[in-house]
Image 1 (tube, rainbow, N blue to C red):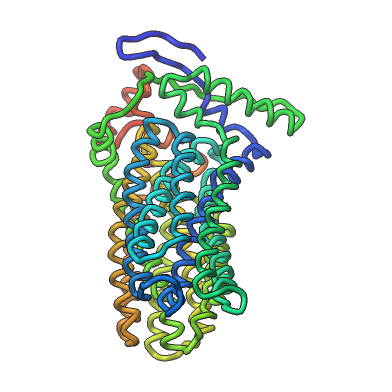
Image 2 (spheres, rainbow, N blue to C red):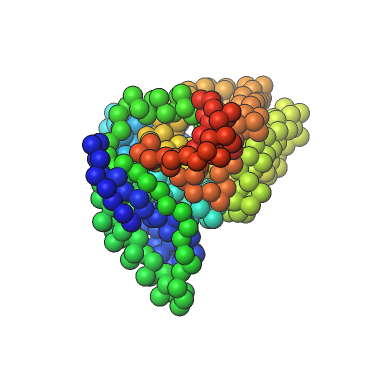
Amino acid sequence: MTTAQSETGRTVTTGIPARLDRLPWSRWHWSVVIGLGTVWILDGLEVTVVGNIAARLSEPGSGLPITSGQVTGIAAALYVAGACAGALFWGRLTDIWGRKKLFMITLAVYLGATALTAIAFDTWWFLLFRFLTGFGIGGEYAAINSAIDELIPAKYRGRVDLIINGSFWLGAVGGSLLSIVALDTDLFPADVGWRLTFALGAVLALVILLVRRHVPESPRWLLIHGRHEEAERIVGGIERRVETEKGEPLPHARGELTIRQRKSVTFTEIARTVFARYRRRSVLGFSLFIGQAFLYNAITFGFGAILTTFFDVPSGSTGYYFAVIALGNFLGPLLLGALFDTVGRRVMISGTYLLSGLLLFGTAWLFDRGSLSAATLTACWCAVLFFASAGASSAYLTVSEVFPMETRAMSIAFFYALGTAAGGISGPLLFADLTGTGEVGDTVLAFQIGAGLMCAAGLVAAFLAVKAERRSLEDIAQPLTAVPPRPTTADAARTGAAAGPEAGPGAPA
């Protein structure tokens, strides 16, 4: 690495991004996945537990004067509102303070809030700490996705990101089974069992916090923020560990990047980058988040009410059905994830969105005809969510890799907040009303709304998705601090006609 001084800061030429991308998969990468990716399990646990214990919380003797509608409607909307606010608040700090500092702080916020939810004594307390729990989780989305994408080699980035985001559903399986045990009054009193589910979430968060201490700061972030010596030490240490594990020297890293280091990027620069230079990518990100948020809300909010109202499934048994569809959700990213790195982003993103939307339209038609039982409806949901889960995970992957390094966390936070606010705040309120009426037509309408928006997002992806598979993050979107190489005469002749708002380094391929 070479350095030089300039009027606006130190200019650094480095091969750190290429060195990280050429690493073979190793035990060190598994430690990153375990330390950072497991938080999605907690999110899945949180959301599922609350949905499954709603009926118990509203019963006399639960210890809370709250209705089922307040749990599935207001509390769910507050959790999502907290996640949106947290994403924006912590996302900005993630780009300024660094990935590691924020993924430690946000997990601590989650831990404290969920522990305090366990001792709720009144409705306002329960609702407040549902908001604060979401506030911590929202920050996790920005900090974790940024760190994972900047530490995982380009060859594996798509599948790893999808599987990690899909691990939300492992938490959902655990939450479903845990709620069955917690709601068994032969084991726990009605006012104790539901509290233990939140307490367990806090214990798991503490364990993850201890593991996460060993995950380093992103060398890419350090490099841009004037801490290139620290970045060199971290990357050198990783390389030595991988070489020792593999028993052979690493291949030579090809490609260098020259950047002009700076401490921060202003909101004006972020807005100009996202909405002017990369406006097509912005449309893509917003569409993907809106589509998946509404589809999931159409199914998951009120799913218990659908089973109990239309198929007479006891409230204490709905967890078994949810565990089945949650497993289908996890299998989608697990089995399809590698195809996002081989077949490619555009085909797989548009395909999973369109297939899940069309399958949900089919489910709505069968439900309207009265052709489904509780078991066959669950099977239909599994088919829908197998594809939808891979698509939804790819939304996070997309917005975390198609914008420049300096705006990555804020971009994730922004699109997550906008898409989730539209689908995740209005969704629970809308779909709780539709699925709670007991009318078949209203539930069919809920399914059709989710399916229609998912299909629309799939069509947007078919035209606008970026060819990001197996490409370096710096190749997909050049850092704002990058110093462009001096073009040769041949380069100028070849690229002169390509000028446009998204032409040049980082433009969609």
